[in-house]
Length: 284
Image (cartoon, rainbow, N blue to C red):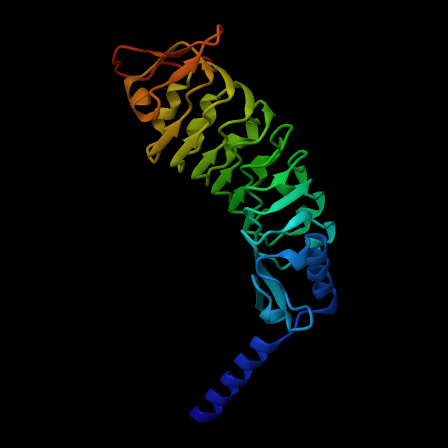
């Protein structure tokens, strides 16, 4: 009996490894290859070989669950039908030559946990459809040319742990729903054009370990409520237009000691308040 079970498991494993994706999914992958100049990829696909052998494609059974084509010289625009790969959990296209916009159809990838489109040449706004990815844990959009505001419904990403979108041209205020991301550990939005105030509601981000808002146009007082973030290990919110007092603890935590740009364009450090028994109340 033991031998029969072992044989059955071996057969099952063999079938799983050799299972081929559906013709429609294979067509989507081929469209991606053609749309991003696959003939010049660093690691090319043999379109006549089984999909299971294609570089960066991970299958479970006949389902495409991961595409990892980072640093692979993809050049072109992302085809909208890429979102037809509804079983995708990981889409990593980091450091390529992709341009154009992020297709709104990305919202169809309901199983996506990691979306990494960083270090490309993408433009346009971050589509609101991204906020429909309820399983998303990791969103990396840094080093692109993205414009507009962060989607107002970003708080719907209740499982999000990493939001990294520095070095873009994002503008406007941080949406109120951002402060509802209770699972967030890393928030990095440096080198954009963000404005408005940083809300005292930032204290809701209790799991936050890294906060980077360096080089934006944020104003008002730095919320003393940041002191409530006991897991915060790294912070850089300098080179904004914050004013008023700060605490010695916050000044020491900030990697540039709260160096701000005043209304005359001159860099200066915020004044540190005398030690108090309890934090000052935020202006929010």
